[in-house]
Image 1 (cartoon, rainbow, N blue to C red):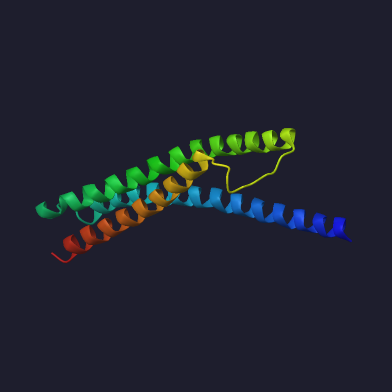
Image 2 (image 1 turned 45 degrees about the vertical axis):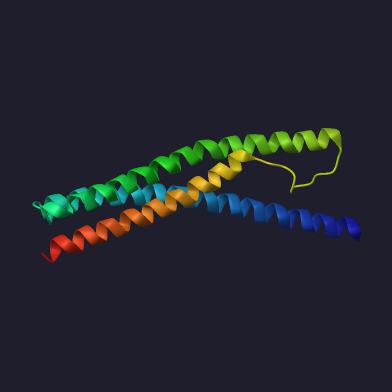
Length: 144
């Protein structure tokens, strides 16, 4: 009974980890797509709807573009760092297996994983900031 329970536990744990990684990859792709799309739509908006924006609002548009650009850049960097995080985690697991020691997850530091998580949070935050600036710019120019 104990071995069967452990096997069920391992399979369930594996499926949860796979789901987490799949969701993480999807989030990165969505943020990248949304940031690039928002940047492109803002260019179209300027050309078609507000070809002559209020002079005092240009900095708001530039801030939106900067936030979208930084969001895209942080997402791309997080892609690279996540690959390094996976490689480092494999090395940690291999070392643990070869040494047959205690696998204390709390003591293991994978700085690449920490940086990847931080960049993902930054990317999402920068995207939201870009959207807010774009909404403010649009409202000020459409209501003028």
